[in-house]
Amino acid sequence: MKHWVRAVLEDAFWSTKTMSEETIRGLKRIAELIEDIDVHPFRTTELSDIGEELSECTDLTELSELMWQAATTVGFQNFAIFVIQQGSNGAFRSRICTSYKDTWVNRYHEKAYQFIDPVIAQAAAEDGWFLFSELNSSAPAIECFWEDAETFGIGRNGLCFSISRKDGARIGVSFSTSNTKEKVEEVVRLNGFDLQFLAHLAVDCFCYASRGPSLSDDTLSLKELRFLYTLASSPDPTEALEISAGYGSNKALQSSIRQKLSVDTVFQALAIVSAKGWFNQLPFDQREVAKPFPALVGFGTGDPMLEDTEKEKSETKAIRLGSDQEV
Image 1 (spheres, rainbow, N blue to C red):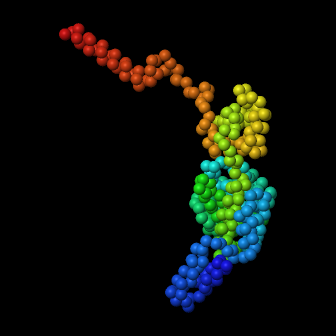
Image 2: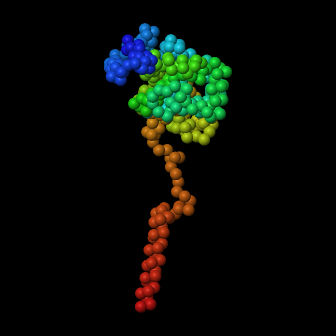
Image 3: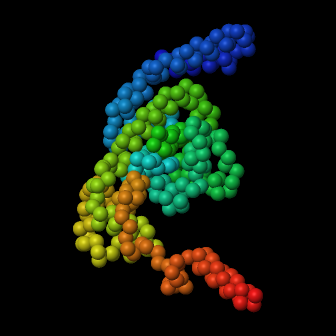
């Protein structure tokens, strides 16, 4: 299997200095040829089976189980699949799929660690893969984050893949462990290419299973869209939820919206509708038309620049008439 062969070849690159440069170039060429073949034979039977099941997976629960198996099979303790950037095809109903325990997930949310977590920051910066140990953790806030994670049994070493899709969405897939960075480097050397392949399969499954519904633009009625738009533009969404006049029954509207979009809350529906650009098709409402400034009301043009021009013309004409009378 190609990754086993590559690992053996890399051992040869790194462990001996007696080979000639020509021999080393030849071994590297063999490794490249093996990597370039279309079929992806996994290094182990366990990972191969997981990859086959991931390619047919359409459910988030099954995805979680398979990714946890992949993580623990190679020596990691946890995995996480997380949305970094929404795409143009609609919002995600589930933005994180992970094996982390609820205690740490709740703590992460409570402390708003998504704005501190260096893994998320690096994954958002560019596509590719990186080791946690390569991240800059010298900032006090970041060090506090890692120390807090360790109290919950979450290790500060691991591997992350940042994957962008054609629709503009970017998804991160990370594997973490309490083991040393040397152990992680060894795992990546032996299984890195397989994990990368699994990460892409996992992202495909995650996007399919957690995307908002792909519906036609006229699925929601004008009243339903208008209600959501009012909610989106309101300075107080909680108060806006009580709106009923002009939109029909508030509860009936919310129930219909949730049912049509298969979501639990109207705020989830709002994210989907906004991401899909459905608000752009709403007709202008009379209440959305900005009125002229009071000072301009009554002027013929309503344009101060034009009014000044007309005034100048009148003054010029008066001066010219006066000059004619003197002559």
